[in-house]
Image (cartoon, rainbow, N blue to C red):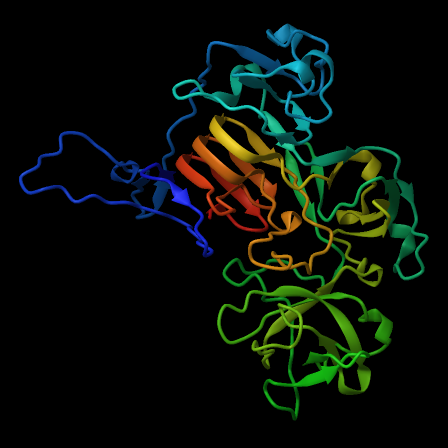
Length: 458
């Protein structure tokens, strides 16, 4: 996507722009002699079978007049940073940078080593100039593989077998480790294979049908009841939705109480949302939970809407792999059961820690190309809404992205990057009154397994 035909300004009202295209009509008799817009170039080619094959522009390694090299795994911040042999560990925008690296300012091309994982977050504090952008990129001749910026910590050892939590089933098949942060996402990496480990849930659904990923979820059946508009009161008297499933909501109420329930709803949109189970009524085969925005509002929980439950230790029972985190303060204990009951000390476990990898309140003349972004976290409270108090007060933890601008920016390019196993790739937000965004290019990127969405320019 390319967008560079005029600024976006935040007015007194909220304006959300997903895609803007400004088309100027040619005056009578005017003859165009060259291409003017990116959409006039073909970005896909047809195959003999009638399919379309994506044909992105190839990555071009471009540099400015001043280069700095970054090798997170073998670099040192006390090095000069001016050659591959004297690379820094940290980028100057990383709060953990020290010494020479931390003191660096100005316009440079920052080259990240391929084959290395950069573990940390950057906060933009410099700006380029017209025709002389700050570049974050990689050199195909330096290192093998991808230059990865990731939001996780690698947990390769220190796992102990057995679960000490009373509500975890099959304790002997679960491993645990204490860590000082709170991951909402976990992956297993074995060689080149990445496997997402889901948060403990019931049912243990899988994506059996790519055209219907919810095909293995449970559903509300409401036998001998209204098809919708069934309610129950919370202990404090709040009106809640009553979801009834006569097949599965049975047995010990503690199995359900306090879980996160993700339910479809009607009448339009219906995207499953997370909210806590506040009431359990086993006699009715039902659970009580709030609507998407708090109470039981205008949306309907309808017969045959599908749902599942997660985030309770009771659900950590899937031999295909699950995790649960017992949060204590800012950290806690990570309980893990891997596919095939593997020993996590024999593979690399990536536990998500950082939500946003490159963050900015202003971003001017900055080009980010040829990098891979991977393994980001989300806010701990999965039920938190996007706004706090008013629509002009955005909760930062609910709008993360690998690359995020919340403010003004000009001449921003994100090209030829790979975003995978992330929350969201790019979010550019002219957030406050007077903010202006212009000359933005987001093109030729590959996006795979993004939990929160794709490219947002708002």
